Image (cartoon, rainbow, N blue to C red):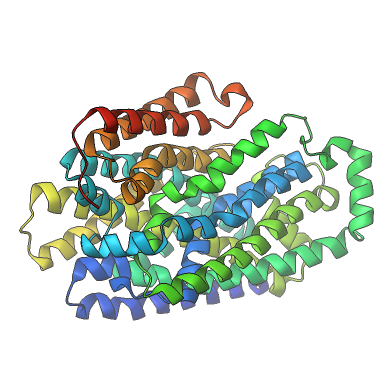
Length: 476
């Protein structure tokens, strides 16, 4: 173990735990446990809103899987990744004020709350909660594996031991602090992610002998590393442009990100968050993925591309600086895990238990169940992560696509189309989930596009057709 590397990471964890215990005070004293634990009492300011969106969206894919894919494919993956820059802009502009107003009107705490109130259907609520649980489990597995691999690379312990350390660290502050703990720690983690990205990119350029030298080395190894088609020319223009649906526009349908649009304090906070979030996302996505490409010159021949970021950091930075930079992917992973944990917990506790099993449950019982459900989910994901997949990014993107295919049109059309009704929403959710899983299993990347594109289009057509031929919708 290198104590100079580990000390900044330990300091980072201490700060996170302090934030969790600070937020726990609000959970204990709040008049509404549900509003506070799952939505932070809707009091997020612009900076915190921007950072919690960036930190929730930036995950093991952005800091481990993404640079790993860039290491393999070259600059083409950087081009593909930059479609994520507009994510925060789209979420807050498309959902924005209307979503916040309607969610307050419905007293909605979760995405499922909003959909149930908008469509007046228990089946919409059940489908939403089940979809969130199913698809977010795969996303959480990716984060658990990413956190464990990072700790494994830095500390030198076994993968299993690293997984235990990571799981315990996350579960403690999420269980005690809820959404406010997540939002506060996301702000800290977002700053660390931004600073770590800038430091690593500059260090990689210096270690590689400058951009000109790096580009010459890459060209001599494989000219396709500098092309928009990838090292094996598998990234066609149609596929890359269709990826924008998955990681750009389609992110409106991700419950873990969309729920942030319910939680801000006022419109000024939303406008500030759009500017800050777009800038921070752009720096992180460009910096981390470029560093992944440049690492091919600095540490060639890696067998496990997902380890490129920690190995590059340890290779080119002094130990104390490496510890600070390695806190960035740890921050990204922990900030995503905590949000996903809380979202699945809210789906089971708020959307299923309180809505259908025990609507009159006392606050003390709801608190106890919320804490236990969050812990059980974390332990379940821990066991599923013991056998990690080869490429983290595909596991994470699978969950993204599934959630977008299910939720994007019930959310967007529920806000902006008066004729949208429960029959259209239910049909669209079934069509989105079913076609996405079928395409993923039997015809991935159909017609040269990312798998998510056709299910999203099919779910839109189904929604509109069914809504038009069935009963009138509710008045917005």
